Image (spheres, one colour):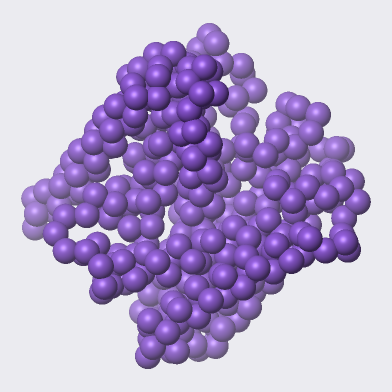
Length: 362
């Protein structure tokens, strides 16, 4: 099995879950949302795309870093390349916000230009991972890998544990709201908003993914790949059980307990779900039909950034293909199928264009 197959498939899954969440949220009328059970299932599926994208960014970061180390690239050069890539993604996030503001003008408030979105936090997380890998990357490849696993897990725990006070009792209110928003997602409101993507807790998913990625590159995983994935799946089930156990405990570490938004127990649950999904996707890619013939999921996963960027305008933006907030569940589903097929075609065009350019340059 190709090393990146399960990552592409998992990214494709995140794209599809993202499409359905955005389409039903944007197009279904309030009456349809109230009367249809589809809304609840859609929202449930909508809790996965952002953690999946950020987690997989960490896994991919480990793969890229390891590949460069094996080629003998110097630690400083690796850090420079990866941090610059993170800067590029962060810049894309800023450009995306400008585009959204311009296309939504004059209805979009100027504060939307400073809203913390997924691309912003992806870029910042990549920069932080670059620093972490540089700090722990001295010495042999194997020794650096072990240090990166431990540092990634440690960083994820620290970010998750620091989130509740930074959201409640120890908010950095002395900072201007655009800066504070990158810490806790307060934006222009009085309280942090769970629909935004601040560093706390979202960067923790990237650090967790980084640790998982380096574990999958370990000598043990190289010798017994299937067993390594089974171990991750077992750890994921254990993490979910521990999350439920801690939540039911009468001992709480924080003055304000908000399990579903800021608490480390919820982060533990979501990480457990992510690695269980990783195990299932790996099994599907290795023993199922994922790599037999054409896979729409893998195709979307190869161009996830592009389809994320474009579909937003045709679902939420000025060029929405259906009237927003006015559709039945059936009509919104038809629109979802249309968006899926259109983004799949766009993805194919993108990859074929890249292949054509490579052939033309030879």
